[in-house]
Every structure is written in C-alpha cells, then in structure tokens.
Amino acid sequence: MKIGKRTVVTIDYTLTDDAGEVLDSSKDSEPLAYVHGRGNIVPGLELALVGKEAGDKISVKVSPEQGYGKKDKELVQKMPRDKFPAKNVEVGMQFEARGEDGAQVVTVVEFDDDSVTVDANHPLAGMTLSFEVTILNVRDATLDELEHGHVHGPEGHGHGGHHHH
Image 1 (cartoon, rainbow, N blue to C red):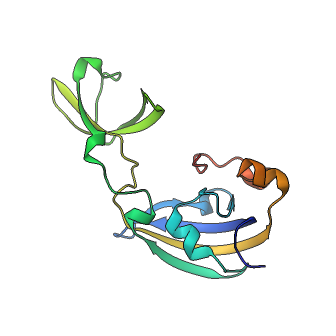
Image 2 (cartoon, one colour):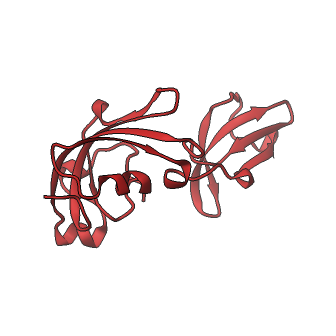
Image 3 (tube, helix red, strand yellow):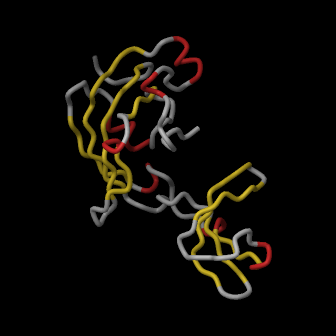
C-alpha cells in the first residue's frame, strides 16, 4: 500500500542537523505512527513520504520553510531579570512561558545582571533538517483516527514530545 491521504504510516527515523548531530531519533523509543496529510509531522518530510511503501528507506533534507519555519526576530525578547522565574540562569535553559497563546517553550539566549533574553522560536527553526527514514508499515486510517487526526492505540501513545498538535 502506498502512503497517501487517509493512511496511517509507521516510521523509524533519525533526524540530524547540518553538522550531523543527532537531534531526535525513534531508535531510543518506539517507532512513530502518524496519520498522513494531517500535519502531524513537518511538511517537507510528509511530502517526501507520499507514494512510498513499507520497506522503503529514504533520506530527505528539509529546508526551514518546509520544517519548523524561519527564525522570527519578533520572538526574541528581553525581559527584566527580576521577572524571570529562575534564580540561576544559564544560556540554553528552556522553560515554559505562559503567553497569550497558551504555554510556549522559550530558550535563554543571553543574560546579564539586569535582563534575560529569551527566544520563543522552535529550537529547530531556521535549520535544515536531515531525516533518515525507514517505512515500517502503511495501512488505512480508521474512521476514529481520521476524525481525531492522530493515531490511537499502542503505537500512537507514549511518545514523549512527538505529538505536535
């Protein structure tokens, strides 16, 4: 069966950046199952998978536009140090900030005694992503899955942080 709309696809993947650093991999957890055509994975990867079948292996480079977007300067903000929740600040620290759009993860990019600069861009924004993917399984999505737009059952849960809603 070929990957297309209304199919559920199970993949093993490893994501690396330009330097070949592994950013994310399903090897440490379970394979990833997703409903195709629902934006559950980055657009560039979804496009590359169309028409492929179980057993296929692909490597695909995804540009920032087709991945997590370009870095948005507006999302980098300086805040007064005394408004900052943590006493000890380190560059690269991530924490949840509650904004108008609900919670978002921000990363500390610089700080001094008076202020802390945080970046609310996705950590992978602006990056070219390289995916190595092995397609394990392709099947028709159930009505339930199509209604909810994501996979239920054992293969759909227990992914710390892989569900982008």
